[in-house]
Length: 352
Image 1: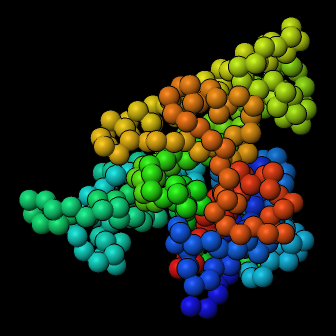
Image 2: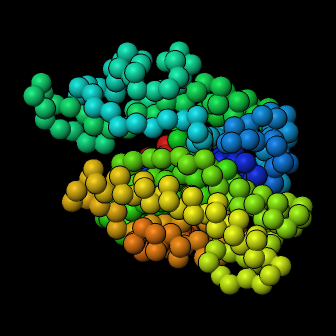
Image 3: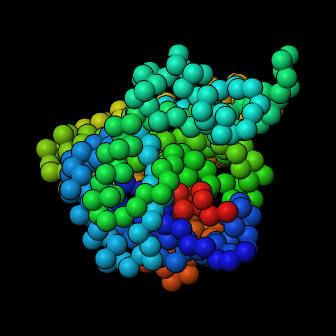
């Protein structure tokens, strides 16, 4: 098998991230070790992306174009990720049939399962396992429904940059590919990716995504809480929250800010905990063994320990570079690798 290079592009609320990955004869399997060819990060102006959706197409497009020029990515074809509150993921059972028939039948199967009109949604289905039912074989899997507006807004920004989105993939599935590698593929793990405005929870059992939840809170909410409590600009609050953290003793000058941080974080952690409880209760015998924290918001000091205490599970910082050969391309961004899991996983989705 010839070597193949693929570029994953992650458009977040505050940054655009891209990763170009090369695959050899092992393809993109969870046991293979692909090579990171180049990686780049560019900051977005405030408000260009809101709630995970592009609202200023020209601004985002210009940022992506600059990212390509600065890092000299080897292709203009990209795999684009989507993942926000307007993307719905549901369990779904369907009669066993070829995937082409599954996709063509989805509009008739899911009309009562999604909160938007079928005509306004882009639908897909990820088969998870095959079961025998009373009427024959049944495919169990995950239905993905994204609003057309969300997908079109993001693809339009990419096209404005002169690039070509060849596949649009769910960011949660990208997280699963990037993190459920090596030894992790033999276990059931939960990946908690704390973005600026959206926290994605992906439960992966033996390398296969089993449940996805997108929670409407993230690191930017913590920053704003600190800014309000201390009456300081957002850029200063971003720095201040790193020293305040979660669960640390504070002096009088930051005590109120610490209380506000705890209010935001405790609500988010409770939502994550409830997700874990629900999954474990519906999957006896395959319960979650470990949590991996990724995303820019995951760097908040004390968050991992707080999450571990709430869920009674071990929590570790995600290290997506551990499953690949990062070499010189990843050296400069090794300290930011927890923010690059989605971009890496997007590249891994079509490399086989």
